[in-house]
Amino acid sequence: FLDTLEAPLQLVSRIERLSVSERTSIRAGWPRCRRILASAIESRFHEVVMATVVIINAGLIIYETDRRADHLPAAWWQQGVDLFFLLFYSVDVAVRLYIYRRPFFDNPWSKVDLFVVILDILSQLITKSIGDVPSFGALRIIRIFRLLRFLRMFALFKELHIMLMGFVSAMRAMIWASVMLGILVTLWSIIAVEILHPINL
Image (cartoon, rainbow, N blue to C red):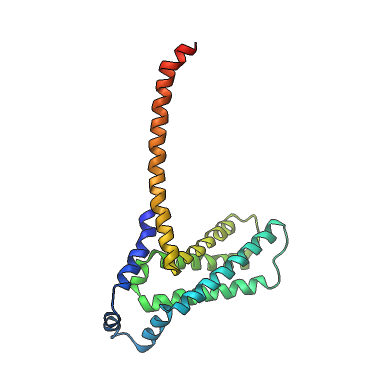
């Protein structure tokens, strides 16, 4: 899991080391439409738009969760907005698949996006078939997995990704520190029982 998180940053670093001329030569054989889409997808404007959409989508999910917790029916506009977000994410994934083809699957973040889009489509199909039933287990699981979309924020901004990597590295150290402390506490507890416990008796 930790290696999977580190992979996108390494991929970004390799791409960033390519000069403009190298990128142009690689894409020289691409159709004009594909080159234009690649420039648009890799632009800062696209990152800002995606971040804005993810944040708005997060607010909507929080709103839906609150209404569901209060046993209130979904608002009349929620289904239309959900379909808009699903269409937006589906188009984004489809365009990136068209641009990058097989290398699309080399990036774990892209696979997460594709996985969540497929789950969203399944959620819509289930809701259309049986209605919005809160007790339906599969629908609950799909809603929980939709939260993976928020991880996209770490892929959109390099600064957030670097902070995530620092947290992951610190977590590794904390895990081994916990193991070491557990061993030391166990050893000293055995010594205390063997030496101090007879004295107390």
